[in-house]
Each structure stands twice: as structure tokens, then as C-alpha cells.
Amino acid sequence: MNKYNHFEKILIYSGIFVFMTFILLPFVEMFYASLRPLDHLFRSPYQFYSDDLSFWAYREMWNTVPMLGRYIFNSFFLASCVAILTLIFVIPAAYSYARFKFPGKNTSLYLLLAINMFSGAVILIPLYKLLRTLGLLNSYQSMIIPGVAFLIPTSIWLLKSYFEKIPIDLEEAAFVDGASRIQILRHIIAPLSTPGLVVVGIYAFIGSYAQQFLFAITFNQKKEYMPIPTGLYEFIGYQSVKWNEMMAAALVGILPVLLLFIFLQKYIVEGLTAGAVKN
Amino acid sequence: MNQKLKSYNSQTYMAYALIAPAAIYIILIVAWPLLETIRLSFTNSSLAGEDYVGLENYQKMFSSKKFNGIVTRTFVWMFFSVSLKLIIGLIGAVLLNANLKGRSIFRVLVMPPWVVPIAIGMLGWLWLYNGYFGIIAGVGMRTGILDGPFGFLAYKQSAFISTIIADVWVGTPMVTVFFLAAMQGVPRDLYEAAYCDGASKWDRFFKITLPQITPVIITMSLLSAIWTFNSFEIIWILTEGGPRGSTTTLIIDTYKQALGNYKFGRGAARAVVVMILLMLFAGFYLALLARINKKISHE
Image (cartoon, rainbow over all chains, first blue to last red; front, side, top):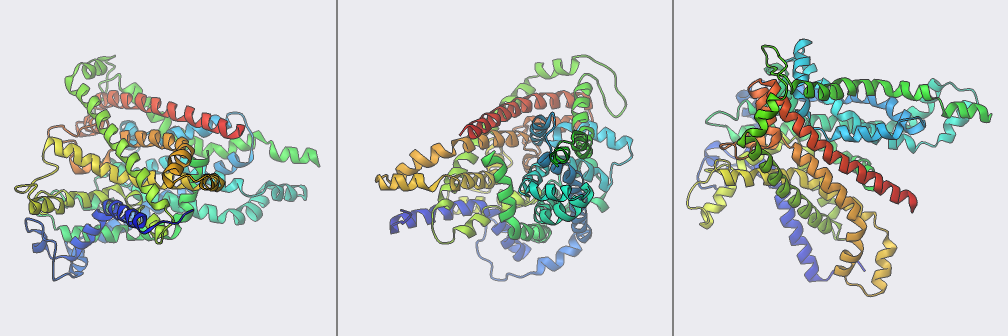
């Protein structure tokens, strides 16, 4: 019943081609631009063909953007801190939601979902004042603290569903045999939930990598703490943007996240869609 | 033994203790700022200090023609963006659901706009939209549609449309992936039965697939409406709300008032409007979710 004739095949593949062109054109064009010499890029109308493609921009960008290495490090450092902190807050909470019945459980779970719907932009003013009072403006913390808050809700939902898959009988048996709750956590829950923890940790890492703009432009003006996106935009305002090097720097900056996602996309997508599709 | 087990599963204080750190964190960083925003909206707070001014911020805001224009513009922008995301997402999901060679690769290739930081994706769009050197203007000039360089982000209408397209680009992959997941969740025997009855592919789509994934379509419409409403980075990077305010949505206006001019009070009043609208959306969404859940548990 799932056989297609030639005509249908051609129709579907050309549909996919158009769809994929829309989705991938910016990336393809970014990569192509990064390989072309600047004087080819600055020709109007647009030249489709360049005969001297090279990776020159990937060497030159380190000179044009002197702190590029630092920006990449910052992006990694920020995302790692956010991911680790998110896990620390989320693990006990998700375990509690997965295992206990208590008054207010469902209400608070839905409230968490509601938080997901608020953009950070709504609470920027109090946060700005708070961070200023605490002397935390222009620091790593100013980007980490709000970042974690917005990743906690989805992470709790994701991890809760992983914990729910661990049979409760295992825990109960251990408990009846006299194991303490800490021992149960260490010897039963922790090893069985490692895959889930990895997925949620990576979700938080990618999520935090992606959100490094709003909080970064608002709370941090210091170059030495800037993540890649804000760092690169410092160079976009000028008259003569070295587009090929900007594209090269941007692509190098996102490559790690992209690879991470491609390897683990199956698990992340499964987790995220399970929440929305079946719930 | 049963007594002991009962104690294992019903330790309410333990449940709360485990949730407490996350709850306190969210209360401090999200809930308190929300309330504080409401309070600030009744003051003339700025970097210099603050005084209570009652409803002044609101009166000024609602009597300004500009603000009313911004609200209308936000909803028009949202309407086009969300509709396009849903339509393109649905078509994409149908295409990628076809049982053909290479579909698992396409399913991965569809995701980059969703995963990559929006700010980086917008770097690509800035280049595509470049009036002199960009590929879109280039194709336009070579085919004769444009009679010269054309800065897509430099004119009111084209900037409005260009920001919508970039927003659709960011939002479509997620919609596609969720629709795909829903389509794969449709029980196979439904299709097999219809096939035996001689239903065409077209019939099977409209009479089985579409009704079966309707709950997901409705959920995704609301979710994308919320996210589109919140969309900040795309417009900020491409146009900063310009030219001449033509892409200034509520979120952009809130940000400009609050952190461009450091008029916290005025910004807060706008943030409260945003908050109320978001709460309406969220209310719809949660009510819907509760209804769908009830249906599932009844079945």
C-alpha cells in the first residue's frame, strides 16, 4: 500500500527538494561565502560561480576577530555551566514528580509548562535591576542565572518521563531489603537513568547555546565574557563586513553543537515529541 | 511489609523537599520578576530612581497611536508567520513521511534552523537579504524582476515580509518534526483497513491522517503562536524594529522602551500587556491540554 509510481516519486522528491532548499539555503550560502574571496562576494549582481575557492578565511578570521577563541570558549563554558546547574536542580525535582503523589503535583507541573511560554524579554527589567544590585552585570553569572531558569521546566518534564520508565518494583524490593533512600538513588536510580541524564544534559547544553543572545546583549557589555553570537555581531555593524570570515567564524562556532545534535537527535526528538504528542 | 512500602511511596515532605531547590530558583528568577514588573509599571522607575505614578504609564501607552499600531502590527505579523509555519510544516511532514529512500537523512537535515543559535542563522539571512551582493537580489536582477540592487530590509513592506520569512524558517523545523511524530503515531491498522476498502492515498490522508493528528495540529498552532509572539532575536538582528518602526512588534517595543531608553516604568507597562496576552494564550493551551489528556484517559 506504500508503493509509489514514478510520477508520484518525482512529485515527492521535487517537493522535498524545494522544502530542503528553503531550510538549508542560508547554511549552504554561508558555507559557500566562507570559501570565496572577499572581492568575489562584493560583486553586484551576485556571482554564482567562483573558481578560486579556499579555506583562507578560516585562517584569516583569527586575526580579524582577535578574540574569536575566547568567544568560542565562552559559549562552551556558559553552556556547560548552564547544563550542569540545570541538572542539579532538575534531578531531584524530576525524581519527585515521577515517584511521589502529593497535593499540588499536577498544578505545579502545568505551571512549569506555563513558564516555558514566557519570553525572557518580559522579565528583563527586574532581572537587570537585580543583577545590578548584586553587582553581577557584565559577568558570566549574568548570563548563566537567567539561562538556567528557562531550561528547568522542559528539563523536568523530559527527565520525569525517563524516571517513570524505571520500574518502581526494583526500588521497592531494595527498600524492603533494608536499603536506604540514598543507597537506592546511588545503586539503582543513577545507573539506570544515565542515558536519560545524558539526553537532558545535552538538551540543556544545546538549549543554552541557542539562547546566548538576549541575556548576553542585555546584561553583558564586556568583550571577554561574550559568547560567539554577540561577539560576532560586534563586527557586523561596520561598513565593510568581511562576510567570508564572519561566516567561517560562525560555522566553526556552531559546528560542535550541530555534531552533538546530529548524533543524539533521535533521543532528544523522541523525548520532546513524546511530551507534546502523547500528553 | 505493606506498611513499610506505603511509607516509601507516600512521603509527602520528601517530595516537597526534592522539588524545593528548583521551585525556589524559579520563584526567584521568574515569578518574582513577573510580579516586580507589574509593580514597576505603576512607577516612573529609571536608573535615577522611582516614584509611584499610578496609571500614568498605561494612560500614555493606550492613548498613543503608535502603540495601538504596534499591537495591530504584532498580530498581523504573527498571523502570517504562524499560518506559514503550519502550512509549510504540514507539507514538509507529509513529504518526509513518504516511504522513500533517503527520508531518514532528510529528517535530520530539516533540523538545523531549530538547533543552531538563532543569531547565527540570522547572520546567513542578513547576507541573503543583502541588496547589492545577496543571492536573492542577485536572482531578481538577473531574471529582470528587480531592475537594480534592492535592500530587502531597507523598505517598510519588504522588511515586514522578510522578517516573517526568517521567522518561518526558524519555526518550521520544529512544527515539521512534531507533525511527523504525530503521523507516525497513527495506528497502522487504520490505513490497512482503508487500503482494503480501496481508499486512495488522497482519501487516506484526508480521512485518516488529518483527523488523527488534529489534536497535535491544534496544540502546535497555539505553541507556535506563543513562540512567534515572543520572537525577539530575529527582528532585533535583521532590522531592530525598523525601518521607521515597520517591524516593531510588542516585544521589540518593550525592549526598546526598557533597555534602550532605560525607562523601566514605561517598559514595564508594555511588559504587563505582553504578560496578559501570554497568559491568555497559556490559559487556552493548558485548558486544551487538559481536555486532550482527559480524552486519552477515557479511551
